[in-house]
Image 1 (tube, protein in one colour):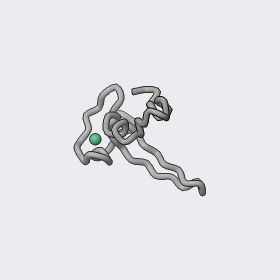
Image 2 (tube, protein in one colour; image 1 turned 90 degrees about the vertical axis):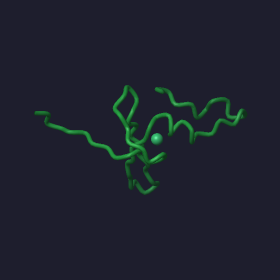
Image 3 (cartoon, protein in one colour; image 1 turned 45 degrees about the vertical axis):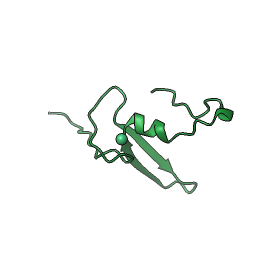
Image 4 (spheres, protein in one colour; image 1 turned 180 degrees about the vertical axis):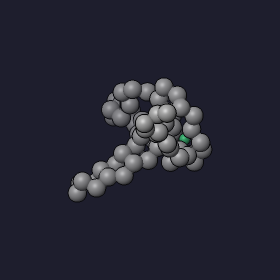
Length: 66
Ligand SMILES: [Zn+2]
C-alpha cells in the first residue's frame, strides 16, 4: 500500500478531469509577496494556452519542460 497518495481535482482552467501523463497534472503554485501560497492543478496544455505569445517577448514565457 502506498504511503503517499497524490490526488488532484479537475483542471483549474478548463474544469475537466485529468489523466496522469508525463506532464499532467501540472501543479500550479502561486505565492504572494507576503509568502502566502496556494496550489491548483491543471493540464500542461491549458496552462500553456494562457501564456503570452506576443512576438516582442521572443518566447520568454515558453515552459521549459512541456
Ligand atoms: Zn485543462
